[in-house]
Image 1 (spheres, rainbow, N blue to C red):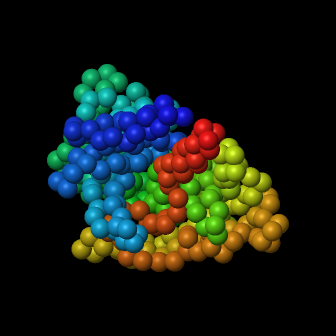
Image 2 (cartoon, rainbow, N blue to C red):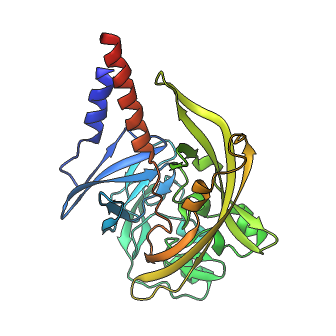
Length: 322
């Protein structure tokens, strides 16, 4: 147990370099990043590109935002990549990446992913804008052709931007995990006094035939920690789908509204359905900075979850020495 605590402390220690991979993260990667205000930790889910990072105050308010979108990529097996260094980072782990194939990439805004040698890529600042009206020219400039439009990257796209049942189901650009509104995928939320885990593998784009639109769908499973310190998933499982409506980006700000539909898959006999406290987390509206996450979950991060497990373990370890 004391060795485990040592490893925990070592993993959250910060580096003096611009970034470093920290190998203590459940279902993702934690990158240390130096800012003018000091080092911060940037969490990135497995198989996804980093988004802008918010720093919260003691009351849950956002006190600072850092432009970390596209700087880091966390591989599907937990590999750490810095996209402005030569490697597979901006190619999102794809050694065969070719921008002419209209493939997704991971770069900061204003950058494109260029091949510097066979199987090696780096984010370079683009000398072009993405104002192209045809796919060949759009791809040739290093951008993405999406739903008959040239986009610089998928920073502000989500499942709702797919325009047909076919493109929604295909989810070619993995917007169900990487896109706007998918911030809860690969995380946990705390609501109604319980903790629910939402796995990347159970997030998808789903076409709503009644509404005629594509929505983000995910599954939440209750995560429990027993009195003896053991943990696991309970039988309480629910699915939910979300739909986001984004306003125009004006002077760096954008109005957003979202709604949710939830239904029980299994369990919840004690409360007779999905608790309102859970659905309330994913329903509402606000004004966001263009490119930042749509929703700010006041829930429970995987990092905090693991830290709680350590504290519980230390408590029982201490009792065993009495």
